Image (cartoon, rainbow, N blue to C red):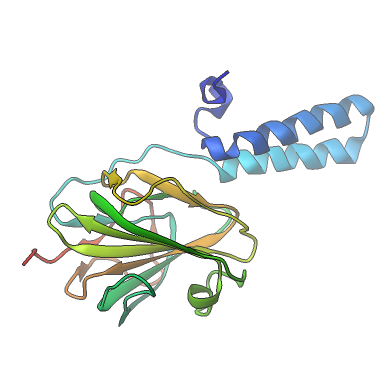
Length: 222
């Protein structure tokens, strides 16, 4: 049976189905046993899981050169830095996006193109809004080349509560702009590394939607 065909699960990412159904089943058992406070707790957890793993449709702009946000959340910083470890990128514009537990946690490709490399690194679980999270937390680097040959990278970073990064793609896979490529469970962050000449169209503190909000505009390919 395809659980995704159940109407109540249509807008919940498949990664969340077992959480919602598991808590839902336990809720029914506790309710039948008359364990009042326990069934209320597990009902809350089932509803929370459904909200956390929600997976709405998004409609990216198709204008050439636009970069869309890879995640829902709030812009933490926009800085000029060296490219992330193992990416091979030199100086880059880094945009950090913090996802609270209330944001959609499905991650989306910022541009259309081809995945070149993926590097997963286990680590700690500091709060994702701290600077040291980018260097010490569990993280997953995706290096990508767009259709014009321009390279960029994005890093999924686990947070204080998150304990698993999920990535659906591998090297040589092609992605459409705004296509789902992964998610992070229960609070996290995504860092986006762009060519330094990129025209940035967001500011610190701004709230963005993955797959829809324009982050900026890539420079023309050489």
